[in-house]
Structures are given as structure tokens and as C-alpha cells.
Length: 581
Image (cartoon, rainbow, N blue to C red):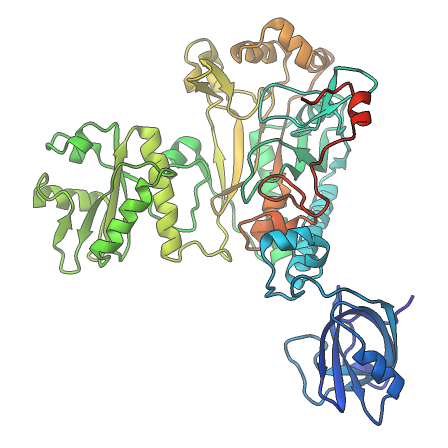
């Protein structure tokens, strides 16, 4: 080894010992008679000291030739620091250097390699290998490692076996867009990169591997945002001979294990909520339950009073913001403009103030009597000092818009603390959703999700009322995992393909291998997948998953560091039988 210790290791117990450290020059402070250098590696920072009259002149000269991010080796004696630094673990000691070796000089980096860097996102992405030297990013990847490590420990303790599934698979028409890979040996034919290992893990259940998991790369060619990348990682799981309750208990156990071992938090029992209640109370299938502001429906109280906006609405619904009655007219106008933005799409916002003296003032006073307003306030259980905000329209749009307003108010009022964690199971999703544009039904989860047993008869009567035997895990308003009990009978799977618009020939071409496997004794099975990157970001208190991935893509799906995607040489295209116009 070129070093005897790391830069985060030495303490007072090593004083008077000789040590050799290797690392990168973080900072140089030259005071003439003394030079201090902060030497950094993955483990921490140790101060080196060079003193005229004590340190060899040639060593001092070499120290003065160093620049930021030079890679060096330094040997010397550990001594107690006169001016201690309680902000770093090695702050009680320093190395009095006897010898220094320049292992590799470095160009001046394009941004500061410090926690509070001066580099913008795009610059740091271009030089990601430098960005990874920063403590904050390195700690994120260390957290990712620990989440993976503890996941494997839990799964192994519960008899799961990790099995790798193929990366070059068959393209399927359902779900997001596939990334496709041309086959040189089969001209005109293509592989797809997996959006998930779904069919393979079901086949593993048919094979008798009754508890499977995999921390696996998946790929989706879809528009990007803070919690999406074209390639992402899942904790993918499947179990045989189980019902929904067994899956919920097993993977609630995993989440509680991760919170305990990674965050030191004893997570209470995870509450459950139906999809119908989540939409009714929060307007979202992934509600943030760190704060209240549950929806209150008002149709019976406000319609038929001559206010056309409410009278014509399918739904009138509102939230109560505690203690916000003192909002000025300017603040309320700003909120109104906020909900009218194209991203939200509301036509307006109605407010009702319950003043601190108990009187009530609203933006619709001319349509409603004081008694009407008192009844509305009572429906919200509003107290003096509270502000009621109301939207109206079609059910789906009004709920979606009010959900956005609720989250915005939660943020403005400081109610969405990233260090507070509220975990929730959402159950009983609709099995199908109807695409008006395509004029057909789509699987809300995927085509292999089983209906609730009590809803099977509705498959021949009312498809819109069929509930899926499916479940999502939500943390702080982010869906971090989802899964379902699977269809395991050939006849029911065939019926599902038929409902989704597949001809028998199309179903056989796309999924014939799975249907045939079901004829050889498929057990009842169920599973789920956690978004590993999202889980790491939540544990790290961040909104974006990008800093928890070593080499992420930007918002255009590009890796600006290696300049990918890029064009191919004509010879490669010719070999793949691809013509580019």
C-alpha cells in the first residue's frame, strides 16, 4: 500500500507515530514561515504542516509547487494541533511532513471541489468525475450502498434468492416506450431493454423459486423529471403461495428495516388507505400525509344559490389553511394567479376568511348569506384565523388542481419537512382505465395484475368498477413502490388480453411463452418493485434522484460527460441494416 492510513483515520491516539497519507490537495495556506495543506481522500481531510527551520527546504519548495487537486503522498509524524478544528474528525491532529511525493499534477478544476461549490448543474455533470469528489455527492453514494447492503441482508434473512434476469428482451406494446437494440445477426429484428423484469420473475415463480428478488437496472424511454432517469434501479421482488396481506407484511418489514438501519428511525405500523379515499380526501393516489388539509366537498351547501360557477360544476371542493386568515388581498390574488397557470389550469379561486373576531368574509359574499358561510365554515371545522380555499369543475380536474394547491400551501407553510417521514399503503386501485383518444381500455398497473376476487364478476358487466388486487407504497407524497397479486391462470390472463384489445394472435405473439408456462402448474404469486433511486433520495432528504446515481443523465436524457447518445459510423449502421435519412 502507498499509504499507512486514510485522511479520515488519525486521532490523538496516534500522536508521535509516523504516517503516510495519499490523496488530493484540497486547500493550501502559505503564511511564509509556515504552509498548511488540507489533504483529502474519500474518508476525510487531514491537515499537513510544513515549517521553515524544521521541515527540509526541498520539501517546502515542493509543497509550494503544488496546486489544487494535485495527487500527492505525504509522510511525517502525527502531532497535536495548536489550533484545533472541531468541524472535522481529524481536527485535533496534523502531520508534520518529512517527505512529499507528487503522484500526479492536476489542472485547476473548473469549479470548487467543496460542499458549497460554485459549479452549476450542467458544468458539474460535464465533469461528473470531479463532482463525485465532493463530500455531499460521495455521501449520497455511500447512503445508496448502505440501502442496497441492508436490502440484501433483509431479503437473505427471509429466504429470498437473488436471480439475474436478461437485459436484452422482447419489446411489448403496453406501458412506457421501450429502448430498442438492433440485432446484427437477425436483420430487421430488435431486442428491447427491460422496463422491468415482470414476466421473468413470474416465470421464476412457475419454476419453483418461490422467493425471488433482484436489485436491477430498468429502462424507459419517457420524458424526464427530477425523479426520473432513462435508466433506473428497482428492488424487484416476487413471492409464491401468498395473498396480498402476506406481501404487504413482508415488504413493510423491509421498509421498516431500512429506516431503522439506514436512518436510525423506528417506523410505526404503516397505515393503509384505499385509492378511492386517497382521491376523495387528497386528490392524489400518492398523498403527502405529513400535514392535514384534507379535501371537503361542498356541492350540497353551495349549489342552487345563483353562483353560476358553482352551480355548473360537477364538484365543488376546498381545503382549510390553519391560521392563514391574515393573508392580504395581494397574497390571495397571487395564489389565484398560481392556480390559473397552464400547469394547474383552474379558472379561479374562491376564498372564505374566518376572522379572529369570528366574523366571516368571502370573495362570494353577494351570493351567500352569513348563515350560508357559517355552514360552510362549520363543514371545514374552521376556527377563527383560518382561511378556506375552494375550487370547482369536473371531478377529476378539480381534485387534481386542489391537490396541487394543497401541496403548494403545505410548502409555503413549512409543513413538508424532509426530515419527517409519513409512510402509507394505497390499496384497491382501479384495474383498468379508459383511453378516450384510443377508445379502449388500458391496464392501470400492467396486464398481469389480478382483479380483486370479489370483483371478478364485474369483468363481464362494468369494467370501470373492477378493482385491482394492487398496492403502492407512498412516502411523503412520493410513490416509492408498487405491485400486485398476479394472474396465474391461462384463461383469466387470456380474458385480460382480450379486454385490452389484443387479438388471440397478438396475445400469442407477445406473451405466448407466459401463457404456455401457466399450463405447467403456475402457483398463486404476487410481488412488487421499489424505486431504489427514489428511496435513496428520500432517505437523503432530496427531491432529485440524480445525485444518488454515480453517472446520471441530464434533463434531455444526455450524458454530457461522455457525449451520449451519439451518432454511429456508417459501417456500424450498415452492419446493423439501419438506414438514417
